Amino acid sequence: MLSLGLVPGSLALQACSTPAATTINLSGGPAPVRLHLNPGVSRAEGPIQLSVTSPSADSIVVSSANGLDRYAARGSMLQAWLQGDFGDSLPLMRYAVRHEGRLLNVVKKPLKVQVCRRHACQSYYHELSILLPERNRRSVAVTGGWSTNFSQRAIRTPNQSPTQRAAQSASEVNLQAELAIAGLSARLEGSFGSGARTASLDLSREIKRGSGGVGYGLAVHLGTIHADWQPTAGKAALSSGTAYRASIGPAIMLKGLTVSTQIGVYGNGRGVMQELTNFISFNGGLTDVRIPLTLTLDRMVAFGDQSLAPRGREQLERLTLAWEVVSNLALRLRMVNRRGTWSTGYPAAQMHADQVDYTLGAQYTVGW
Image 1 (tube, rainbow, N blue to C red):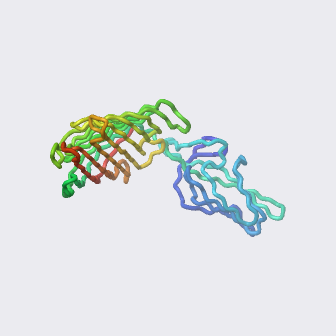
Image 2: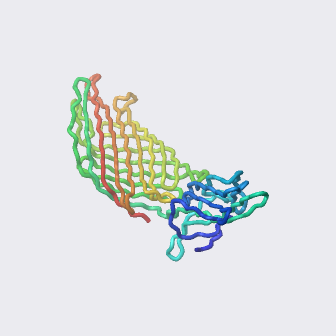
Image 3: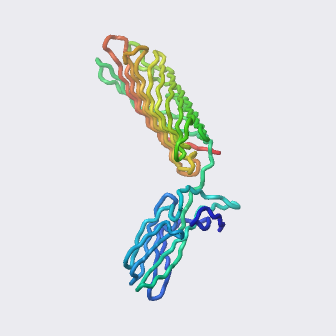
């Protein structure tokens, strides 16, 4: 055990496992006092269910050592929910520390139980155990993975019934590098497969910092995709081509998390369209407390075609989810929905295309 004196009411930090529940006999004999805690060791963000029972007691009082938190009940039983900040005079986020190679991740807080019978009171003492998270000091994460992609497409024109393309599957390799430091977030991502090749760069810069570590700034997105998603003049068919994207907008930032709404331009080889994008990126490997989840959600709508008239329209919705099943190895799932509407070159004739992609695979992450 290592005494650290973190704040008033905390006695020590120590390494500890997490029992589900525990019952302590504070006093035996003909008038026993039993204290039940569930869980026996609570997480910093979670409550503790506490109950004190003592037959023939007139009243029971539970309080912190400094008296800031106090619970009382008449009779032989007291039940209460204690929060992780029990006994703290100020809200304070604590983290586990390492000492001589050991992780000290439990803080002890004194608890006073007072039981009164026939105008005579007896005090008992116990220590609450609060499990602390270990602070994540990573600021860089590099990820590589392999997955299989399944896709299906439908193309139609006003004078034709939809033509269905049978579901296709293809292998895909994805690479990603992400940086999260004070006031700056950056992510470089690429995927390479037989069906499509993509690359993107996202930069977010904090301009002003608010309360709770939340920052407000500016985000920029640059991207390119090469796929068979380019309309062919005069035909209800799509051919291979490259599209480019560039957008900018305000962002809300927290370490490992970026939320942004952006406007920009989208070029697909036939013209330049206006673009509106909503973007959410979360990397649990870079947050203050490490979380085994990575999530990216973005929605892009491009409209117009070299004029103010909305003759062309493209929409892209993507959800990418990775869950760490073992240390640094995650299961990756991506769902993509693409829609496009283009002029075929004939009056009042447009082509519509819809495509759905599902990608399932695994990825490995190295961070420092």
